[in-house]
Amino acid sequence: MDVATVRWLASPHGWEALRDLPPYDPGNELAEQSRLRAAGHTPEQSAGLLLQSRLRARAREKFGEFADGMLFTADGLEQASRLEVAAQHAERYATASRATVHDLGCGIGADAIALSVLGVTVAAIDADPVTARVADTNLRPWPDSRAHHGFAEDFEPPADPVLDRVGAWLDPARRIPGVADAAGRTRRVFRLEEMSPPWSFVQEVARVVPATAVKLSPSFSHSDQPPATEAQWVSFDGELVECVVWFGPLARRRGRTALVLSSGEGGPVRVDEAMAEPLPPSPRSLSALGPWLYEPDRAVTRAGLLGAVTARTGGAEIEPGLGYVTSDRFAAVDFARRFTVSEAMPFNVKSLRSWLRARGVTGVTIKKRGVRLDEDRLRRELRIGRKAGSGEQTTIVLTRVAGAPTVLVVQPD
Image 1 (cartoon, rainbow, N blue to C red):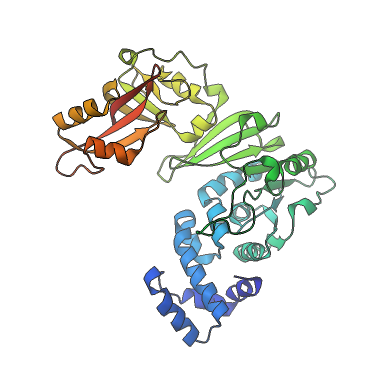
Image 2: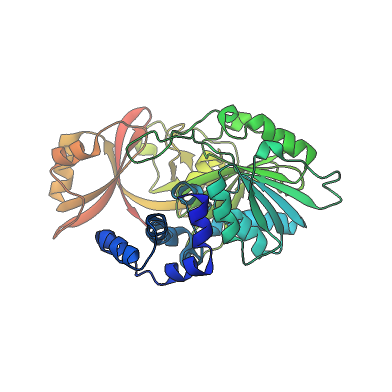
């Protein structure tokens, strides 16, 4: 898809053609392509319409009904913040009274849209001309916000960003341009200075524009966090999606924090270092395990805030570095999942198989942490499947206790 195709898709004729497309059906693409060509659309226009139909179907998971009013690129959709996450970003700028935010690397404009919804004017740029045009189209409901083709490194901050109530948002590219595999995915980079723009440029922007934030990979190292900033790891429905470093007035809790989001009715859950206590010693034997097991949300674990779970539960990590918490206390923890432990035993395939068979278990959910094994091979050795069928279903946790491989049979509460 090129800029001319995006421009046509954004025109009244293109938008009408998009509205007339039937629901996306992968088995009907060739027939639909023939229909579009017969209707007078060029090969480029037909391909663009089919691409948008395919991407909009995928985008509904991230953007819901808003997807039907947006344009996408494949890479842009994959890398975009889902609306619930982007709304959390935008709320910080709005609360900090930023009138204008420079979105340096806007992608398809998900964060720019969320900012615009809250009344913040966005000046967005992207290094890819097609992506920039897509973002500008997606911003049409907010005429004061625009996206242009440009490079973050060419950003010129205002003379007085504090007085002008200006902020900056950066989402550096973490992929090397060019197709790298059969699926069309480009190769990821992991060093901060290999991002585009690089980490040193991000820090320079934060120096001259105090209200700056940058979206990074959730693998961001604690040791790379600049002083006096807030590094927040974010999860959505249990999936770890990002780490955002907030500078200046956007940092609400200096240090490391976690934000737990879900598609359910519960509101955002925030965890910070003030809630964490030093980790107590891990149990030295199976007999020291408590009747409840807590599995912290991945954002909490990645932020290094396991001490907030042990503080809330009065428990201890079952093995240093594994994240699971054992406790004698039944506690409601909104940033950890609780399991009842019905059995704890040394891990041995033959013994576990006998235990399961004696209880009529025909389906097992396997969770593992701290042990290396092939799950499919283990299922064959246990002679058991993933579904219960007419028998019982249970969950087993394969882990370590006091350095020894251990299996915990648990049930979620």
